Image (cartoon, rainbow, N blue to C red; front, side, top):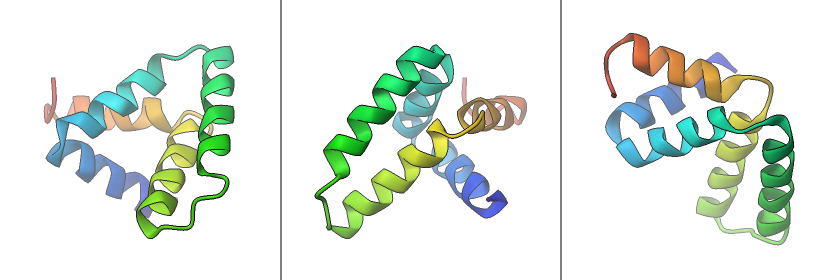
Length: 82
């Protein structure tokens, strides 16, 4: 899990748009997160393309536990994104 966390942190550093997605998820309420997770699952259910599978894994990871908050804290504490 730490490898995935570090990979997403690096992606956030390289691409502001990814960091903005993680920030948006981190700000969601529990109910909003559950609804978004349901939408993600429905959208990627029948997808088989490698890019789609990677996107699904990304969303699954940031929606799990407090991973989005952890990523925002790490990136912000390093002063890498505003």
